[in-house]
Length: 416
Ligand code: GAL
Image 1 (cartoon, rainbow, N blue to C red):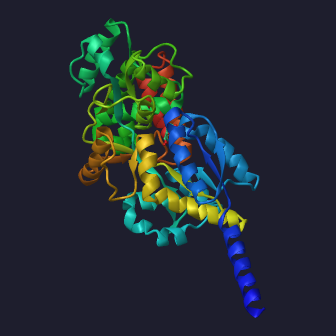
Image 2: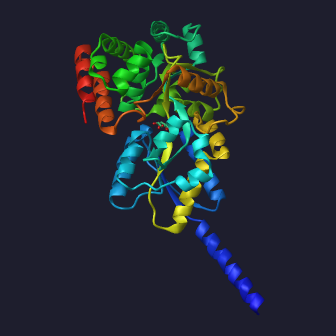
Image 3: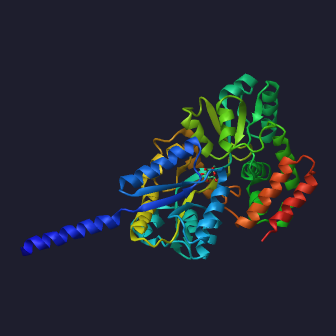
């Protein structure tokens, strides 16, 4: 009898234990394009495999502006999701509101401090405690090109300088095709802008003007040259670009309608999802003049404080899964990025990813590794939003002179 009741107690404990183990995890993200959706589905699969319920909270809109707005309203109303895809200084802003969960127990058990580059770990921590889990490293300063289109236009070598690029673009135009596929949100304009700034001005200029927001650099002759080059790129886009999503611009390159796109390597997720092979169907190359530099963009999930014990457990499992080897490999193979976790094998990755991994390490040593402003890695959201708008206005309105463009951007950079 005694034995039986002991057994019953033991069973009850196990049942109670397993009930507390499974929980619901609500994840806010903006990964809705073909390649992105395939990538996030892998995380869902892993979480479901651990017995948790995945509540998908997808807010469409590349770059995440829409998602950020929705997130704010959910947190303000006291009902945050378990995890939200936010990054860079925005993590610190959310943490300072006191709404993020402390992930130190998971981070310690999983040895995050040893498995992450310090620059990345620092961004995931607030006052020394982990509050977010990093997913990947995207490189932003890429130029994508369709091999067949280049061939048709008689472009025999991938342009390495802006002069070579404009010569190639001219040939594509003459062949009756669109030289540059572009879309119409301010973050897309800025993605091109920061690659032009890096290519024309170099790393020091990029750091001074766009990261330190130094007025002298922002109003320098180099900045004038950057805007002139930027406007020239615009001249090779099609008239239907405004309002177009980034992945539809990538599709124009995939479908041989356009030659080039300046976009981070999430574009590769679209090429991969369409069954295209790098080096054969398409080319990945550093944007002109930026081969020795690397604008990085680390996706991450910040975790919000939750009350329910099951949800807390699911959240901790989500954090651990994100940094796990299984997820780091399969997600990044689909997403176009590289693992953020150190010492991962790159065997299954393509040449673009291998180049990215190699350049990430070499630019970290040479000083060429810089955070992407377009993708929220560098400056506080208020100043970032203001300079993105100023750059977009210049891009979209050819009547704004270069001199005024320079002035407007410098003024926007002073936004507190
Ligand atoms: C970036 C994000 C990427 C990618 C892209 C388009 O900001 O880091 O993961 O999804 O936007 O949505």
